[in-house]
Image (cartoon, rainbow, N blue to C red; front, side, top):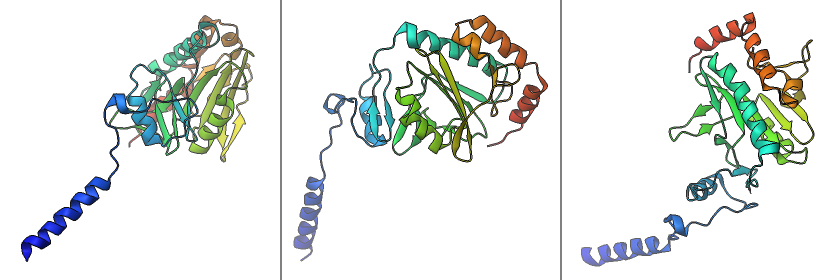
Length: 247
């Protein structure tokens, strides 16, 4: 009797195995990402990984966004200036991570790739996963957008707010406008300039932006303003606080 019973069990197990969908595993069998696709974050990452030549794609509220090629005059140049400014602050401030187009896993429906991010490395609200991707909301995100119609000021703004990005800045390059918001009680409020007209981060004391100089492309003035800010007592206190943080 044992043999017939075992045969039935084996047959049933084979039937269950045959019923499991045979998902493609080879890169050439995986569908490519397409702008407007509606995907889970897991499927988005699978398709992204199968396209090594793809430079940027984002999943925002479950929808795939694939920006058009980047122009030097309304994005690439401005992006470089922002990274240069943030690098000066990063170099003088311990326990931080500066990211340029880093993938950020915000939640189950959102995986962004912001132009720049600044986050606390140890003891902050985000972390770096074992596979090297940021998980959670960085403290500060900066995007470069050509106009106010860009999704950076609409869908992504709402996602960053809901997920807890503490400060969010967008440079609208065609309109020569820079917006910077701070999260208060779940709402983004415009960051007011200080008495000298500079924008000063409330999350990263000592991070100061000379907006007027940035908008006219005077990177020397932007960097000089930032260097002077690093000599202030508020930045020294922040450095001490960062060094004492624990996970």
